[in-house]
Length: 126
Image (cartoon, rainbow, N blue to C red; front, side, top):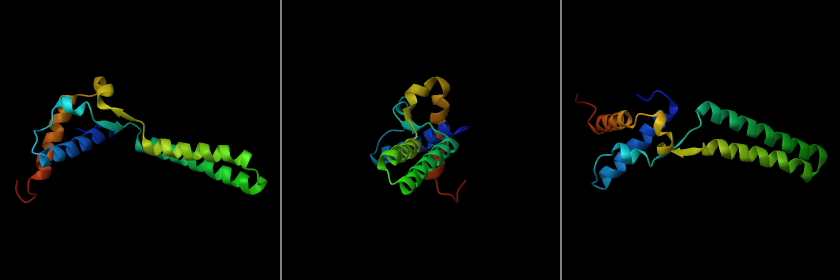
């Protein structure tokens, strides 16, 4: 399980939810609980690309400022670059409910519970 980055992020968020529920003496998670989790939908490669492009625009804007001493010409590339980096780091989060057609929530829930149980058991015992 966990074939792509979105499923891996859902599994990690589900394990964190399980930990919070156990601390609050709650019940195990269900597929309906997964629907309210928000995960980032940008792949790490796409995030890196957006950061690189944003950095290039910011550096270009700084270079323009140094060469022309004109804030009017340099502020737009710098702002665009910083915005690009912020957009990449934010990662366009979406609720799992919106991606439900692409994912099998029952399998994801079973995988989350299995990994959570494996994590909670002592590593010396099989």
